[in-house]
Amino acid sequence: MTRTPPATITAFSPEAVAARIAEFGALLHACVAAGASVNFVMPFTQDDARAYWRDKVLPPLRAGTRTVLAAQVDGRLAGSVQLSTDTPPNQPHRGEVTKLLVHPDFRRRGIARTLMVALEALAREKGRRLITFDTTTGGAAEPLYTSLGYISVGVIPDYSLHALQPGHFEATTVMYKLL
Image 1: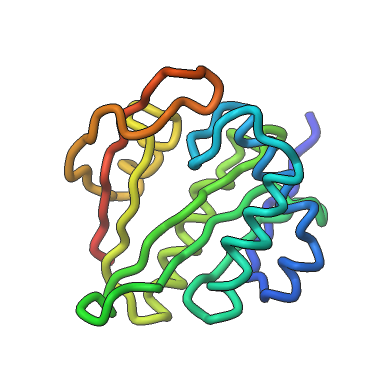
Image 2 (image 1 turned 60 degrees about the horizontal axis):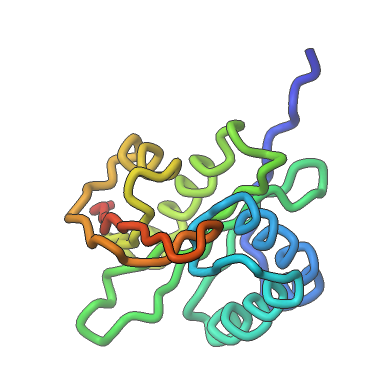
């Protein structure tokens, strides 16, 4: 049996994300095509995926209000997660998780857990002691978050469209964790 090398987690600079925008786009595209509920629905093109990183991630990354953590295995982009610290003045203690992505080729290897643990450490470094986000109710990620100590606040029904099933709505679970 061949052992998979561990993922290396790195905070990517705006320049590093821009230089690898095609890879980040391919990661997002593969996840959406596999059914990940991360705000996009099929049809969703590689161009759409690159545009997300270029137009929605790079500006706050350059402004210093977002951090992109990337997991690499043998130099290949295996996953990523983002920490947004673009919070109102009365919430300087809070950070928001956005777009935890693990490429389908690398799932079930602990990469999502490793990314979330690194995100929590980063949040602490940035003086953030409360993490919030939402996730698809009953989705593959919800048990992971619960195992990491995140607490469900509640469920919002019919929150978003299913990525692969036109006209089908999914509920979302709002979660938090005090660090």
